[in-house]
Image 1 (cartoon, rainbow, N blue to C red):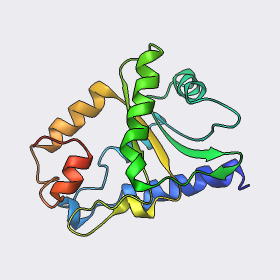
Image 2 (image 1 turned 120 degrees about the horizontal axis):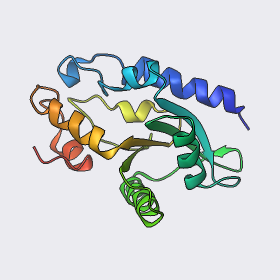
Image 3 (image 1 turned 30 degrees about the horizontal axis):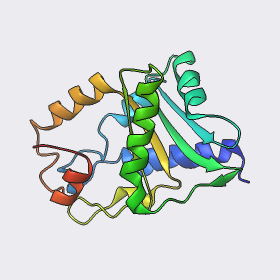
Image 4 (image 1 turned 135 degrees about the vertical axis):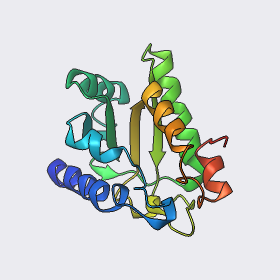
Length: 171
C-alpha cells in the first residue's frame, strides 16, 4: 500500500500540474479554473477514501468538520487503488449523489474523475492523467454559479459534444 501522504501528494501534483494549468484546449483557461483558489485558500480537502475502513459519509463529515467546502478523494479498497471501467463512472457518481441526498447531506454534488474516461477537449484528456479514480465534491450552488460564469467565456468552445454530454452540460 502506498502511504496516505504520498497519495495526497500525487493528487496535489495532479491538481497543480494538470488541472490548474491554463490550456489552449480550454481557450486559455485551466481545466478547472477554480481549483487553485479553493486549494490555496484551504477550502479543498485532499484525502483518501478507503471504503474498507470508512464510509463516504465519514469523509463528507470530515470535510465539513475541517471547514472545507470541497474535496478530492482518491478511491481505495483495502489499501489498493480502485480501478473502475469507464462505463461505470457516471453511474457511480449518481450513486454517491443519492447517498448524500438520502442521508440529508444537501447542497453538495460530486463529479468522478476516472483515468479510464475517454472524453476530451480538442484532443486533450486531462482525466487520463489522474493518478487515481477521484471523487470531487463541491457545493452545488457554488458549482452552478461557476459553471454559469464559464458559459459567458470561450471555455467550452473546444470541448467535444461527448465531453459536454458526459458533464451533463446543456449549452
